[in-house]
Length: 138
Image (cartoon, rainbow, N blue to C red; front, side, top):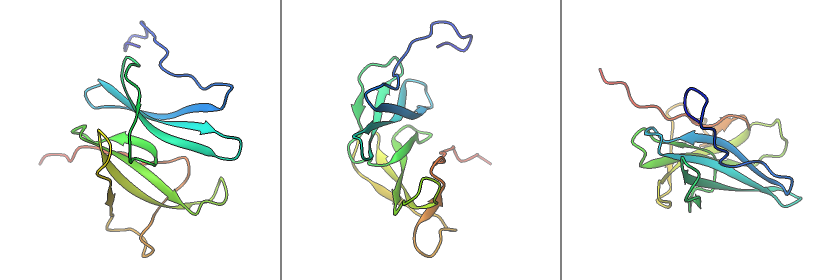
C-alpha cells in the first residue's frame, strides 16, 4: 500500500494448507521484498527464502540461502540469513551462524563477529534475526 494507506494489495497470505509467509524485508530502493516461506509438512517447517518484486510478481526461491529471517544489504547485492543448529526447544537459544548470499542466489559466505562465543556460533533467540544497516559516513 502507499504510505497514506490507499491502494492496498495482498501479496501473500498464510493458508489453511500449512504455508506461512514471515519476516518480510523491503529492499532499500523499495522495488523488491525478501521473505521466509514455511511449508508445514506435519512434522517440521520446511523453509525457503523467497524474493519477489514489491508488486508481488516474479516470486522465486533464493537458491543457497537455506536460512531464516532474510534481510537485504544496504546496496541490495546480498541477503543475510540466519542458519540455526541444534534447536531442541521452541524457547531455547540455538547455535546460529549468520550467512550472506548473493541476491541472485549462491555464493554463501559466513559472517564472523568479533564478540562471537568460542564455539564459533552467534546465539539468537528464535524470534530475532539480523539487521543490516549502512555504515555511517564520518
